[in-house]
Image (tube, rainbow, N blue to C red):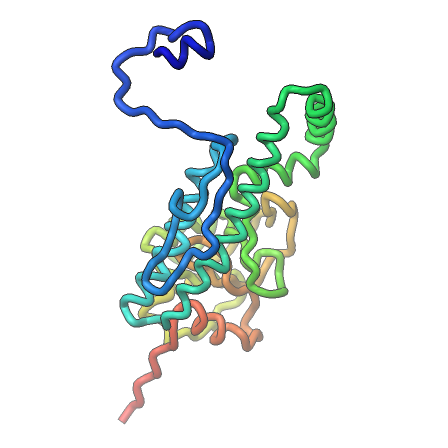
Length: 262
């Protein structure tokens, strides 16, 4: 109460706090998110000024990215090297958030130069393209993991589409409730993933709507997508694409060989 009064001239009548915390405009990030059996996530991996409420999303997505990979390695399904992709994917995401919060802190400084810069940014955000990019960045929906070249969906969060399946209507995120990867086929049936049937769901479905991504806008409809348990797309292709078995093995371990019929 004394601190409030000294800064604001009043304590606003606050009393009996159950929890008190403090923050500064520091921006720090661990150089590595993994060292052997030690893995860092959330505030242990990165801290920043809490502008925009981005810290919670950042920490939760760290956990979701790491959780399924750690489970797969512990079960012996995937090699230990899968855990290295956690740092490779999440470290750049946090670095971008730190850059954003540092810039926003700079805009809070009280002088005419910064005020003028803020006015220019305000003008920019009246335009569709800058507004879409900033919204995607602040919400975390614009995250793009570098999984190589290919369809714009590759390495991005799969949209939660309304699907029609043989079992009736459903949504993409409903298919992920079991925390199992999904090979979502939107073209002609015929995929054979028998070797990964114990860990990957094969869903044949139809989608008649538009394909749009938060940062990019409209994109070409894919034939099929391989969706990781964290909701990010690991492969995009069709029945003729020979790279699907490689993508399955990379993310979900070597397939189980088919048993031979006597």
